[in-house]
Length: 449
Image (cartoon, rainbow, N blue to C red):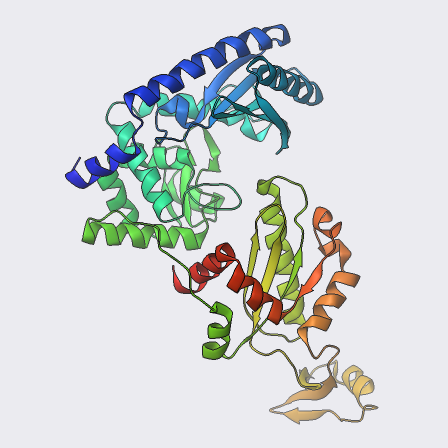
């Protein structure tokens, strides 16, 4: 490990005192959880970075899993998991909330620690999972067996590197690298520096298969992602599936940059004043959008739903001849959610040129019977019929309102329950000027990889 890495590690590695405090709390947590869960024929297991000793200083989030027998019904697993979780919180005089992912779980705040109490089924390695979290104990076991000694510190360095360039976290908000993926990359390459070198040489769609479970062509047929890393405990899963292609590209370019400069990346200050006005002036484009109060659902469900709605509206605008250059979705998960579209033109002409069939097509008579009665007659260019037809929408606001009114099934259910308003260009300018987080998000989208 070189001096640069040692300097960073000194900053991000938990101190002996911090580590002892966490270990002491985890021991108490496991003891009490074991007592509470025993009557329910389940047992506790700490998973994630705390269990794998790859956690970063001052990051004390604990994933506490309650492992149940496979024969217990799903509903009973959820009920007993919640009962055990809330009881644990009460025994520690903590504060808890019920959270919802694939099934409900308990998030507790106890003595400065945030603990997620998550029920799962006990499955054997290679067995089909019953719930999405059933693999997690096997992930922890695998890392504990294959990532030991000095290499846990190299995993810390890779996690920190990814955090610094904003590609850490496989959750729906970040679409980056999970902690597990970082650990697997260190296992594959051996050290932080060799991992960075390896990443810098990766191409889109490349396959990493530590256990040689699948051959490369089979893996490429099975998965269609920017990076493919076969899960050592589940050959049917790509650990890198959540990684967006844009984030993969950023990781690769930042790895190349690090190898040249030997400088750890630092988060960039992304504030640009009057951003939208400057974009309008330089690009000669227009902006329009929608806004609503986010539904009270977990982030893992919220962000995919907002992005899905953005894609559907963008597709609708395209169908109505509005050229969407780019679209963005942003939320603070509590009070505001915005979808913003950048358009080539805000207003369209009243008529458009519509292509018809070839003059040799059997559809010619149908085409002529439909359009000969209009004020503007069909015409032929290079053996193909055309006709000038009247547009239904001349501005994007009208089109979006029509979509929101008549395409309710296209809007995710929880969002459809909210009052969705048009986000006018003047409001967008005002909001971006005022909202530093939104401003920073848009600056990164336009000016950074």
